Length: 68
Image 1 (cartoon, one colour):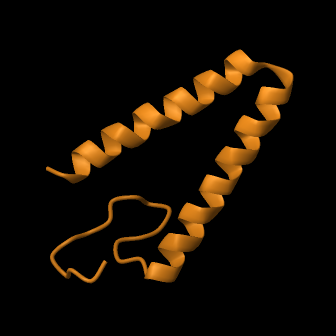
Image 2 (cartoon, rainbow, N blue to C red; image 1 turned 90 degrees about the vertical axis):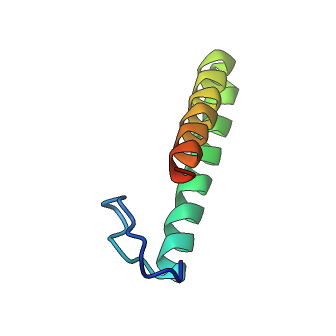
């Protein structure tokens, strides 16, 4: 977060987000993901597994790309 030679490419948070903005967005999305998976699990467990599995794969790809 404090490196000046890096630029954030996520258009939701801008090129140089503050730590507070980044944590607020990350926390909000994590809460939304939890509530969606929890709600789906009570209705259809297969869809909940797909949601959680897809999110894990997506996060893994993003983390891998960030290490480049």
